[in-house]
Every structure is written in structure tokens, then in C-alpha cells.
Image (cartoon, rainbow, N blue to C red):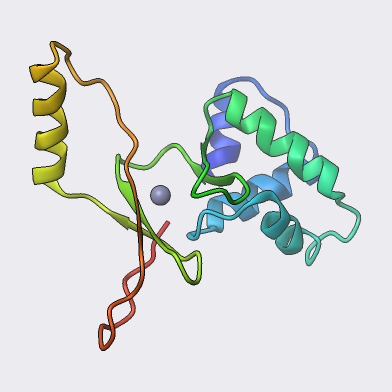
Length: 143
Ligand SMILES: [Zn+2]
């Protein structure tokens, strides 16, 4: 059973065959796909799944807190399972590639900014947009 299906089961959500396949493909994805990309992948395994079904399913998963939705730049919403540990994202402005990172100094700085404003930080979203430096290798892209 994949992580999304397991979470659904934990919440008492029954998955039809099509939704289970969408859950499976989402669980395998490491690139934060949008709904259109997700649809391209699921129809390779079940040609009968419509884009509308994919949209409805990701909306449902998102509403249940199973998927995290990202609005990178002005592009379409992109999704990743919420089960993962906290991380931030850097987007390649030329290719749209999503690179995950975590930096303790940045985390602490954000806590400090919140403290100075009189708040206890409970969450944040940080997205960097960049162009690859000439002569630098491909960054690591993971789920
Ligand atoms: Zn991510």
C-alpha cells in the first residue's frame, strides 16, 4: 500500500480503482507534479481516467491534508504528499525543476524574525527562484 492510500485508509476514505491509481502515481512522484502532468502519468496505466477525475481527486486529498499544494511562481498548482519532513523549495526559473533543501540557519533566522515581531513561529513557506550558474552540476531533485 502506498503512503497516500494508507493515509486515506486511516481517515476512513474509500478509494475507487481510479483514485487508488492516482494515489499510487502521486506517492511515486518525486517532482511535485501538477494535475496535468499527473493525468499524463495515470492514463499510461488506465486510459479511462479523465483530467476532471484527477482534479477532483487531488482537491479531495488536499482537503484531507494528505497532499500539500504549492503555487510556485504563477504556474499551475503542484502537489506532494504531506508525510515528508519540513523542507523548502528552489525552483529553476528556466526549466521549472523543483529542488528541495533545508537550511538550519534560514530556519533559525525565520524563528528569530517572528520572535522579534512578538510571535512564536508555527510554520512558513519559502520558495527561491533561480537560474543555474554556468559550469555548475545538476542540483539534486527529490520528492
Ligand atoms: Zn517538496
